Length: 157
Image (cartoon, rainbow, N blue to C red; front, side):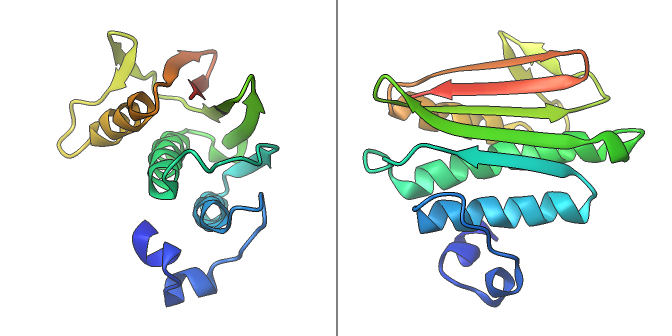
């Protein structure tokens, strides 16, 4: 779905498009997931102040953010009271590094192994492995944590 959206499919043309940054592919992927969240009554707050994405392959960033959003939306959809569900994303630059902070609500406590969220369900957990691979490709660091009904994903690369 994401790849089709990035090359201008009908699905993407029908989706509301929001300009979050000067980077069009990033805007497309974020608009797609914001619309998907909105369709599930999940509130989103996306703020991008970063301007330099040139040192990254855009497909890597889109894959990273797509996987993060898929996981966040899935967690929000599982909530008993989905009216309280939200996803907040901030992308900014600090000390010549791209920083990504994503927070989402959850009701089912995530399981961690070696400080990484895991799923033992069939066909689950591959997204987190992909995310970590992308972050490490760019010499980045990451963290996952969960407390008080909020899941936090942080990246600096």
